Image (cartoon, rainbow, N blue to C red; front, side, top):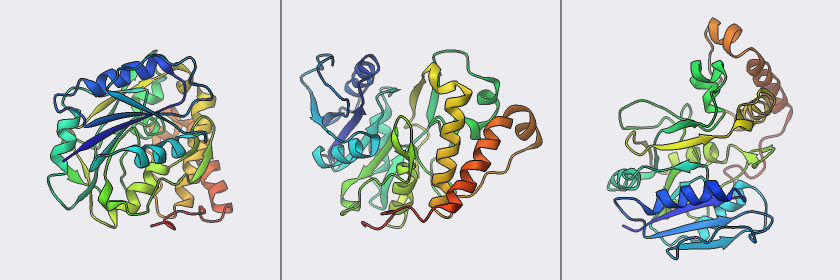
Length: 277
């Protein structure tokens, strides 16, 4: 089994160097490591190790970058790692173990926070609030995911290429900073109709949470966009909140959530979603 690691990057060079170093330090080495340059200019980029292939994608946004990585990768399995994530040495070995089962079409695991500043209290108390930052924790046991209720995160997502066919990542709703959002949810749900999407707790990565991501204004915008995307996907359930979450920890985020879901209902179903299988 050949495994490619794909790291999209949009010019965050200091973060990228660390992410690349973690991908190259695996105890199960990747068969190729690709950085997808999605920045306005590569001129200021660091010199990366010779083992890393750099491919360029002119279209801005994480979705074109992920799709360029799928095209350029040579592995039977393509494992995505975001440039603000760090993979421990056993990450790729745990990913490989998932695909020994031929029924598995996609796999991934927890995305744990690496806070660069102390986070707001809501982000410590509410798993739902942390999910808007691309964090994930579905427990300590390996399990197949229910595509209607659970999904993996794009920063720690591995896909069996043979299961894709013509399928590619599709952005569901615009989002400042990344171009669009919910492409990982849409991809996981599509692949779940072709086989098993597996959660493996040993395949964890750390996600460095930059200070600007924890600002309430930034977080509220992310909540609004992601909830609008969830409604457009038609079936992603609304998570119920406890009274403490609703009134003490998440008040502003809950308002953004409600507005986002209301806005999503006014929009037509996302163009292209599941239409390119």
